[in-house]
Image (cartoon, rainbow, N blue to C red; front, side, top):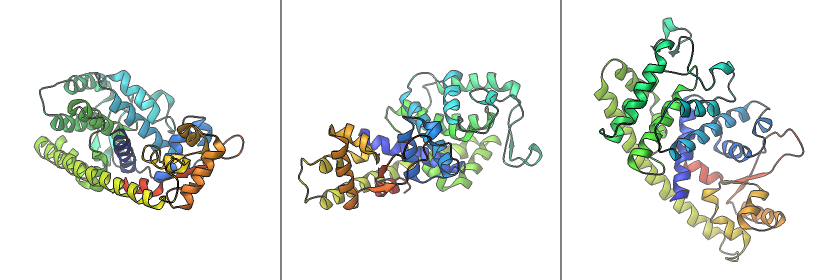
Length: 325
């Protein structure tokens, strides 16, 4: 169950970032996540694709924290999420982890041509406190509550940047808390498949047609749940294929033992594999190379590193490819 939850969480974070135009390969994001345990800022100072991967990895970290948080939601928690989400942003530091202090809008180069002009910044604290009170209610069904809370958050648009991703984080937090599941259906995957419908639904909500928005949102949740089941079935099939391709190895070999750990750890270095297997780094590297020869793993390009030689990573590309289904 924990492995399935981690895979669905990854799918949610990747899709939510894609909606905002942050595109990076699943492999690069996985390497970015693994590198974040060390000197993340140094590893991803080279720009380009690695910056995008770092942004998406931060999005995944925020989603993870949100799904673990089952208590009340308030400004302090949102500010912490915003600081993590925007730490690579080219944004005034005063606006990171704080409500915006200026006019905000969605779409277009300026408010005159925007698709939505947000509320005056002076109204944000009171409106967000009202939203936190609504999120804490227990007398609505979870899907309706998540739909309305998300649309209202996007309408308020409380931050200078990052509102879309944080708004979808709130969706996941509400559904996980109210439904009592470790990870809800990755709704952002469905949003990303119909961005036009998603944006139109939010516009309808702002025009007062709450019912149409909630109906569209509920259909997206249902479709995401169905798609999640298919993805997890595909992951199980892939694992069976891997086992067949490694039948010639001893069951107690490092490579065979590592095989069962890959769904929970789709990107590995020799050191992380050694820690998981409780073997030497040399033995883990041989296991990784064996799985690469059999098509289970592939060598990933290493992130640029400020000091020393680049780290080497092995990635389960076929597994990560399933998350975009």
